[in-house]
Image 1 (cartoon, rainbow, N blue to C red):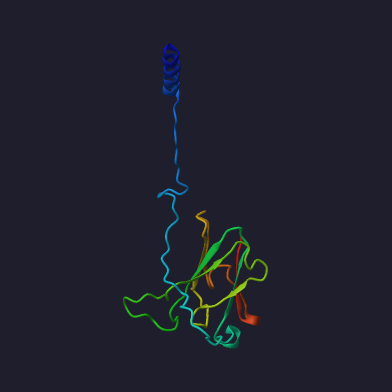
Image 2: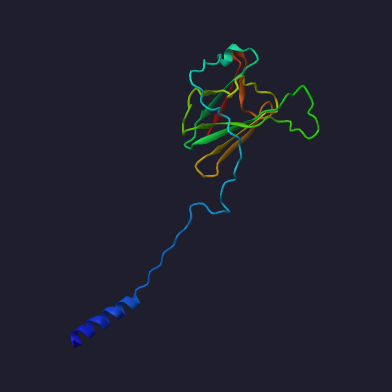
Length: 169
């Protein structure tokens, strides 16, 4: 009985001397969280057996935009186009169309770039259109803004009616 009391007392004493601490640190705090960019979906619902649209290069009023992601990050590229640069907007109307976006895996389109299109077809870049890229992994990396005609990118290749945007690390 004395032995049980000594062993029990010793165990109780040792347990009272142990301290446990648990720290939980969130990977992204509210203060460090990247801003949320609200974009309406740009992909129409799937329609069975729909004929393929004509090639964008076939339409003379259409440009080809190629995007190269040369970074190690998954990237979203957002395009905000002017409505019609030749016509003034009515009061209370935005000068820009709804933004569209494309997502790229790390190194996707690295060499020649991937050709992107709009869901409704015909992509035409005009002076003043804005392209912006940002990492989708929460690393808070941004590229741009690239303003067509004002910044060094995108680069226009007039011979083939193409624009090329290269996102570099």
